Length: 334
Image (cartoon, rainbow, N blue to C red; front, side):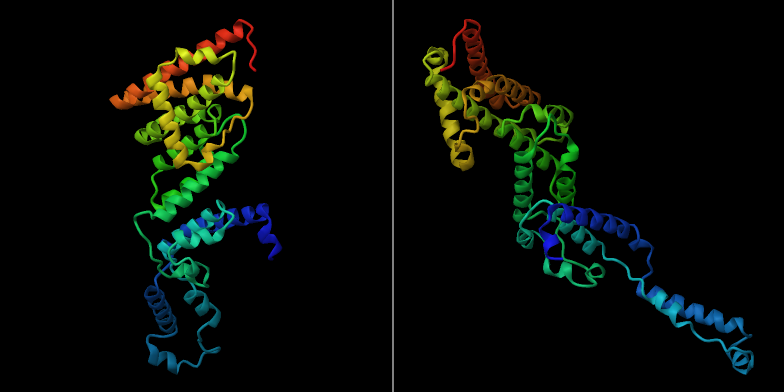
């Protein structure tokens, strides 16, 4: 059994099977009788059996029919075995199964799930488990780490909302808003430069986003991208003159925002775009990204954010046009 636990495919199959069983169990608790109802049913059944053999118990005792009426032990066991499943315990089990598919370190769940050790005890489904209507900081951090990992590993031409199915189910159990989950995931995707992969998801789920958070984080990402492009162009003799076309105050603000974001995101200090082609490919996607932020900020009447996005759009547009002009004139990137 132990070797199988190190096989991701086997664990994933087991988790899906467990979820299917728990979903089946979820449809049965309300139909099962309580213990006192089971006892009453058994007593009524015994009484009906006694009365069916005579007018009353005295007459039944005097009846010499054979074989004598007796309780069926197998039937009694079947009637007494069903137990009502605890709804709180059921949700806790489903959360553990969902969370186990999102991490390689199950010890993390001990901080996220109340009574984590009790979940694995025999009969735990039939006992109430402590729950909270508010998500904890550990639960939010766990979900955010899962979203960051999914964004980092995302491949393919597009990503749709089904990619977030497991995480959103877990978030619903823990009380984490779906807007928070989708906003964090999209921010991570844009931070990794995977704009094209989430373009459709972004358009279809604009109403499922926390616009204020997305705009704030989006401006940080835009500044980091622009600063990276500016630093590359500054080091290139062919493009060095373009820097003189940019507003000095805007360049300084972009640098300050880049430095601030880098301190908050140590992993972002490493440039994700290592060669010349990647550096310049930032410009079209970054310009489109900034225009999207500006439109979103304008729609929710965030005057300050709209102004910042407009300023950045002028910078990105200027850079994009200047680089395209250089390319058309036959300039080579050094």
